[in-house]
Image (cartoon, rainbow, N blue to C red):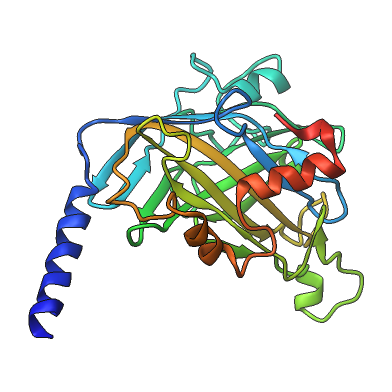
Length: 291
């Protein structure tokens, strides 16, 4: 028994160290209409219908330690490169959201996003708890979390710049009720598009397109802040599909790409289990948002 315990510890240490890949080499994350399964789906917030998620290409992502990789903050003001979403929503891109004070992390080239007919600029905002960085951590051999300060900008100045914490996972996330309901106030909208409070969605991590590079799906649930002029307190959710140019070894990052039985076991508790199932569901109800 003791030998088995020691062997498991050694295997765990070797796996963790191997996850460093090449700490000096940066890689790129792609989540666009032409990539594997497209960019993903945005639910809500509140009663708003499900939407096709905006494109994003995240550059210069690098491991800072075993199992931790970071998109560093980069902003050079009005000089190129400017993110595509900013170019699409203003005639004078300056590297800032429309409040004029919150800088955009330009390593995350976020495309334009239209939500319920209104254009939004979305990006990683500087100056918050993460200081403009996007931080991802591999918690074990098949679970990754991703955190950042995300900003939704309606393009009307400070009142329309909505900052919210972003906590994504390749595991499972549950849609919360509205903040109003949590506080016991009436009038809360306890749904996000086709999802209702309590529904669970699940991501994944592996090499699902079989090209030898890491890919997967991040799931996120959260609430817009009560001081938002847009759907205050309402929950939202998203499934973000992604590809990378980082070499992948399935033995190191779990067995999720394995047998159908394994996939069923992993997803049995989720209301909407895997991205393929989610895409099929959406194509039935709203064919216009497929890739």
